[in-house]
Length: 187
Image (cartoon, rainbow, N blue to C red; front, side, top):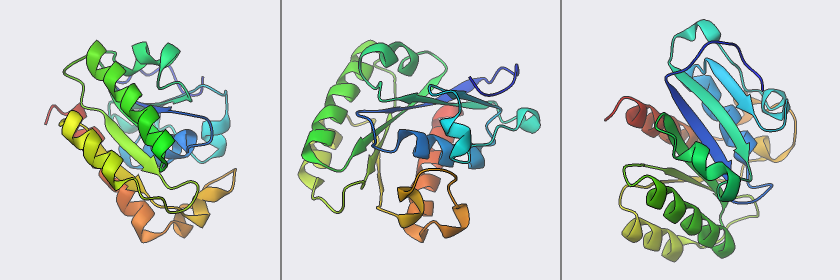
């Protein structure tokens, strides 16, 4: 675990449907604008190496937790905790959208009041998942879907160079952060 002993009021819990879909990347990108007071990392350091920053004195009331590829199974209890703001990351493939649907069903079944955020990451190049995203919107009205485009600044491992992010990537992360903060404030 990375972070401090400061206890955050809300935790943005980022979980992937599979390995390599961008869970750690999304968690790192979200940590900056929310002023995360604490970082919780399933890998003991990868989150910080991607550029996530904890600011214990920020007073934001938010922690960011990277659950890795545990959107189903062992991660479900963390995703549905009363203080959790669940963010599911999946690939922009039919298989990814199918896995996301299963994850969302499990979250909503365990906590009907949950308002998950689904990040569809374009990891493998442009795929048409519009029909699957429409199906998710119809089944789960309370789910926010954000498409994170393929971006060279995010493709390599290690430190994310924020200055090299495309405008579309910045807009996508901003949308995730705005929605997470709205959920956190009860809006």
